[in-house]
Image 1 (tube, rainbow, N blue to C red):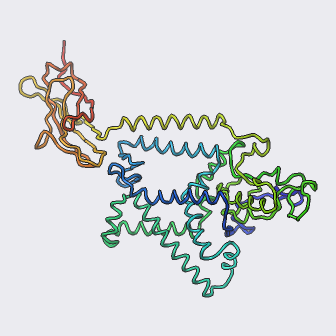
Image 2 (image 1 turned 120 degrees about the vertical axis):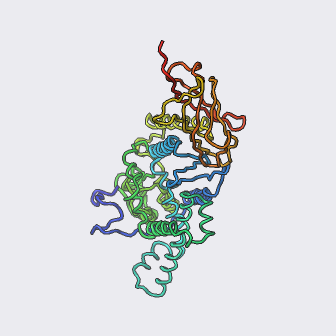
Image 3 (image 1 turned 90 degrees about the vertical axis):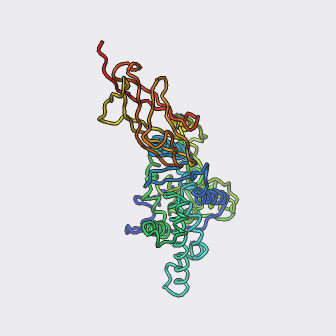
Length: 474
């Protein structure tokens, strides 16, 4: 908050100037305890991001999102089109999880976990500090004419940005088509796979555009999650907040003067140094309260703590706090809203866990051939024709597949050269089979049959089908 005589309110986003043009943000290089923790978290997540496509569990890529072939692996579990309901539940769990943490802790995901923030602040921005220097040097470099120094620094920075963007595009491609296929494409050479090379170059250009120019505008304009913040947050949400009660006191802010009794004069602890503004990567003043642009990166907390420490005032003027904690001194507690999110999340996780445990490695679909009735064979034998499709969700071959009837006397004849067959790894086999049953064993014109699918002597799946026979007239 500002003193009444200078009171003003923003009616535009923080990265626009008075003429409505973009105001380029030159954030000061952050430092402090939160920044050190963010570096540890960020580099651990970056290591995971780059390693995950190359990690295999039971032969399955740890994370795979092959949209074109409709194959997905999540934490080593393969999901096929037949498992789409499991994939949907997994996505719902992710959405509820993020919503839960937003209600409780604001945009902590944006500041600590989001790939956009991690790449921007911990990779590209740090390269920029190394080449161009800190805030003031960057501003000076932008304003100076295109001399040898500026050209050299710009070309070096842009080249490194381009190389990293190309590397990121390759990693994302590994998530889309699989790491094995990507490595094979690299070994074959780009000219052999032009259909993949062009999309790769397009993604490289997109990443370069985002990190070299668009930057914080992704969080402010493009990201839909930023819009959800205003819906999900309430007075009890823990966010990066400025303690205006302590910072403003009765008479507002005042520049620091040595040996001055600020408390006796009615001034708050905020010395209006603007360091919290200069360090902000989205160019806002956290003292205006919770804002759309704030990604909870904690850079302002570290900077304010450093200033408070240097003038012998208590740290925490900017800190993780809720509005109710600042206004009413209320500590964080689970609200009915949070408990509701936790309950829904627990139910969904339990549901997904149960479905994964009950999920078969081989999925069988046996259907009666449409438009076909029964057929009389020699004597009183009734025959029905069916189609079958077996999907192998594992990375090993399923051998010696054969079918048996449960609780019915009859025979199953597979239209193939042998009574058994194999299903290749992560493949499918489909074909036709005939089921023949003596009419005396049938009860009416419709009979429910249970067909057991075996691999060697192991029962791997059961399917229920309708078997048609002659209608009985009693």
